[in-house]
Image (cartoon, rainbow, N blue to C red):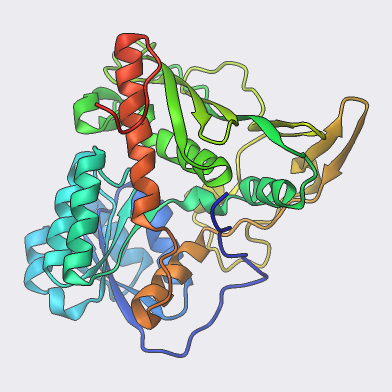
Length: 368
């Protein structure tokens, strides 16, 4: 296991340094729901600018964040880059790498939404540039701060499961009618599909818990009419230390399995349902709410063996902790909340999965 994510504690840590001005590039669901409210909630960060060419999204940003500067294009932001310290890239997947590069070259620290890039090679080029420019570059892997994941982390750390030999993880949904977004109607070569959408989360969690992946087997399908990119994916990963991870992601799951099922030589852990932070962000709630990230008892998972299991109180989820880490990395030189080098291996796993699905073979990440 790598170092645990920062504990969310009981609130958002304050800071005494200067306020850092953030420019958010993109104001679709990612920017509006997953980034802007978290940035706005963290003391020491100010959401100062939004880049979007959509008049409706421009109006929405101004209404929710009065005083925000709205730029219709990134070129307008680059011309004004001296006013900001941090750029957040929340745009279609194929634009992540070029926009991150341009932002660093404009002198800005950069947060890139997942996937970090479409290939591991692109991601390595970005990390090399960040080193060359001595610039902060990090990746938004918010699911490291899911309540259920933090709960599972603690259970594994305390040794309650013993040696874990199997990890099962699912992001499953029932969406039989496609919405026609670029994630569904676009091509995989441009970053569409679930493997690039949900895969970075599931793979990142597995790698954080059990270390690097030695081999990948994948089944990748596009099942719904009118969908070009994958909407149903299964990954079988073997980690170098022997644990096997089975990961499912689907938009056509009429009966969802457990979110986590984890088996060790001393016991097992099972939990159901999705972390509630996304739903609350979609509903327009703020992470400053006193009960943010708290799981009700009905949402707790169970630990033990059949016939002898007990509920485990849930850890507190805290997506905003990612941006606390960004603030401290940029303003104080603290470690990155997500090191890009950790994420590159996840992209190697995705590339191996695509190769495996094409060839119906087991593939070693980073080879070929």
